[in-house]
Length: 113
Image (cartoon, rainbow, N blue to C red; front, side):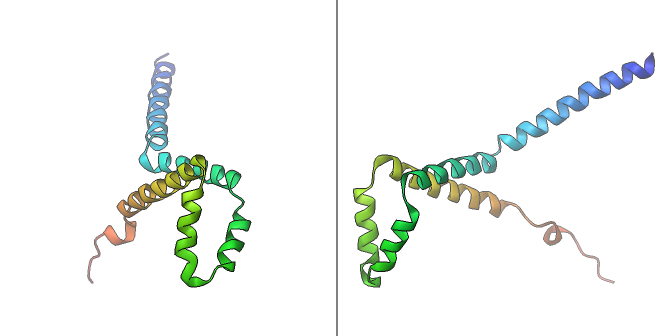
């Protein structure tokens, strides 16, 4: 009977540990920024025909590309502009979060022989 009680307690504790780990991963800034990035990327792809925009960029002379880009942004729809802003903001958050991660081999101490 004692072993069964220990197993039940162990399962309950481990269930809480797994739940807290899952919540910490799901609610981290990187996961949230990744979700925002994916949603805004899909909405941008749905609102804008990317191949046509790319062809328009290639047909412009190089010196007129910044003015062309600015004119496209000024004529853009609100949802398209919001998806672009969400893409840029989520990229910035993701880059900041990736900068925090240090590779393990750079942080370990090496012993000289």
